[in-house]
Image (cartoon, rainbow, N blue to C red):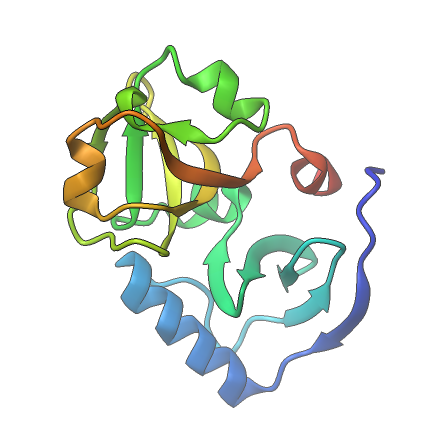
Length: 163
């Protein structure tokens, strides 16, 4: 088991689950879980976690809910994506932030401060979740410098906790 500490895990009530699910659905463009699913909320060392049927599917960063990489793989969201070229993939999966020149495509509805999921251009497979430092239009311009702060990626301690 990975070295992530999970504390204060508790079951969410039906109306809270419904509100959280509708917020995620509006944000991502796909239905996520519903009030019939077993959803728990917990704290970890870095951020809040959402468990759906004992799988870590979501996280809460700075009060904003979003899906983990496993959640993105499971639900296949249609919005809030950023596509990077294959040269950027090894760096991002090692925890590096996403730089502007590596971005190939981005959802134009993204605004600065939004949580986004990052995928590779070849396979369209999710590789990371991060906080956007720029809007969707600015991301596509490929300006130099940090574009997305990496929060969670394939192979990190949160990913290994779900194995």
